[in-house]
Length: 164
Image 1 (tube, rainbow, N blue to C red):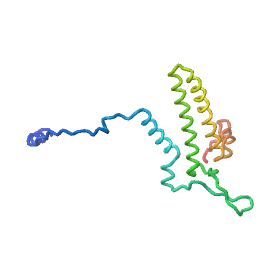
Image 2: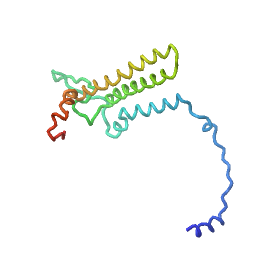
Image 3: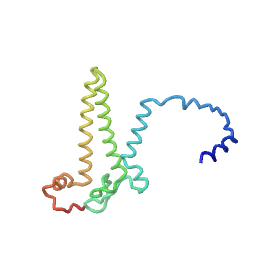
C-alpha cells in the first residue's frame, strides 16, 4: 500500500505556512475562572437543566387549597420520582454545590496553618454535613414514605419481588 502512496506525496509539496496565534490564546486561564466555570456546568447538570429544556418542565406546580377555589404554588412534585419542576432541581443542586463547597473548604484548611483554617474547617464540616441532610429532607418531601420504605427493603424482608 505504501508503494502506491509514496509517489503521490513525492509530487505534492507541502507549503511552509506560519500562523500567528492570537494573544487571547497565549494567556492561560486562572484557577478561579476555571473552577467557577466547572462549578457552573456542574450546577446546571445536577439541577437537570438539560432535562427541563428537553421535557419542557414547568418552573413550579399549582395545587388547589382545601376550599377548592384558590390555587397555591408548590415546588416539589410529590410521588413522581422521574419528573421534576425546575425550582425543585435548582433547590437540590444548590445544596449539592454547598456540600461540595464544604469539601473544598476542608481541603483548603488542610493545606494552610493559620487561625483562618480553624474557621474554614468548622465551616467546611458544617456545610459538608448540613447539605446532605437538607437533600435527604427534600427527597422526603418528594417521596414522603422514603425513610420507612428504605427500611422495608432489607434482605430480611426480601420475598423475591422488588419490582416497583
